[in-house]
Length: 213
Image (tube, rainbow, N blue to C red; front, side):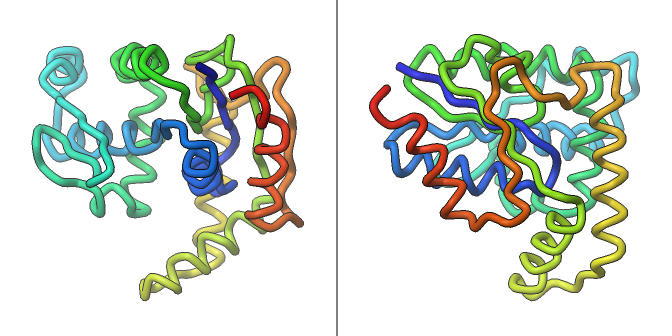
């Protein structure tokens, strides 16, 4: 079994890249972003007070499968993919109680089968001994343009300047938060995909990994 991690800032294409690599290599995809979004969504809806956070986390059951993302048996697959939930995920992911609650969930998955996981602390904290580590990034402008295009293609309204500002704010928060700040993991391969196509990134990573599975 092998573990592959892809870390990097918001909007760098980590999730899409990881999913397609998982399909190509026939290994599991651990969607950590969905975990944090689901946690952020349910905690915000429940209006949990800080002193009751630990108990609330123990009562939350998250299940991610090919059908979607479920929290306590409710399908939240579409609900967690909104700008508002992006902000909630960033807010709650900075809390040590939340990160500790999800840490074991993530590590348990790696004991079952080979997997690829993406996030902001996968290669540095969750899987420091991963077989392959990659750090995927792009300029804020490139990431904002991609998110703008995605929302327009989905038929949503979008404002490029607002998206760019949100990405810059998210970067600032993720880089300087006290708990598991975004950083390049030790021994990670750095990829700037500002001028690379999605397929070029996928091919690059697969070429590095192929032969080890």
